[in-house]
Image (tube, rainbow, N blue to C red; front, side):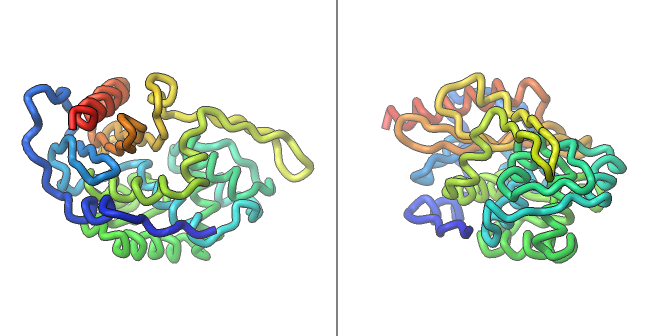
Length: 278
C-alpha cells in the first residue's frame, strides 16, 4: 500500500513556510518551547521557534508508520519475537503488551504503534520492513529528505532516548510530515480512532489499545495525530482537526502534559476563526 503524493499549493507552502509572522494580539498563549500551526491552504496561523532542532519523542512513530505504509499491505502478518518484547521492557518504553510468538497484521500493529505508542510494535515493524532496524532507520532518513524535512534526523523507530535522544526534528518538519501522512486513508483511520480492540484468535491474544491523544475526546472535528514524551523532549503533541472547511495541523514540542491538549484545542479554534474571517 503506497501513500499518494500531496497535491496542490499546500505542499509548496509547507515546504517553504518555515517562517511565521508574529502572533496576532488575540492568538492563544503558547508556553510550549516550540509550536507551529498551518492549514491545508498553507496559511500559517501560529509559529514559535518552529525551526529549532529538538528531540520529538514518540512523534518519531509518525514517520515509522508512514514508511511502513509506503511498502506494506495492511493484511501482512508479522510474528512478534522475544527481542521485540525485550526491547520495550528493557528500555522502560511504552509497550502494547505484545507477546513472543503472536502473529498480528500490519493494520493491528499500526494501532499498537500509534494509539498505545508501543515500542514493541515499533521494533517489530522496523525489524520486518528494514529488513533490520538499521536499514529501517536509513529508510526513515531518506524519506525525510524526500519530503523536504531538512532539519530532521532519526536514530531509531520509536523516539526513545538512546541513541542520541532518538534524533531531532523541528515543528515545521513535523507538521509537514503529518500533512503528508494524513492524506493516506489508512493512517488517518488509525490516528483518529479512540480505542482499538483485537479479539483473541489461535495466533494471538486479545488486546485493547486506547489512544493517548485526549484531544480526540475533548474537541469536535479532531483528526489525530500523536502524543510523545521523554525527559529531553518534554511533552509533545502533533494534532490535526477540521476547522471552517480546512484541515488544520499543528504541533507543540516541549510542553506540559495536560496543558498541551488545552493549548492545542485553543490553537485549532483560533485557526478556525482566522479562516472564517478570511
